[in-house]
Image (tube, rainbow, N blue to C red; front, side, top):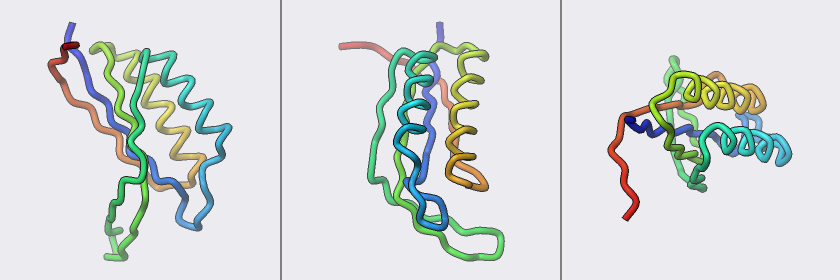
Length: 106
């Protein structure tokens, strides 16, 4: 079966500086783990983006890297967890990417 790499880029704080509640993060990670079997979280990733009016936003982010079977229901469940993170951080959007990969344990 093909594998899919999912990456979810999540800011550490909302635009007003409020951070994600630790209990919420742990709950989301628990659900991601249940749906995927594992994940890696890369922290302190610096990024910038421009809104439609050209205003610059600088964020410090975490990136969740999740490898799953190419199963639409599993991907949908993880996407739902990304939407929970988006809502909890009062974000207009967060980055959710998927790509087909070849994977092996060596």
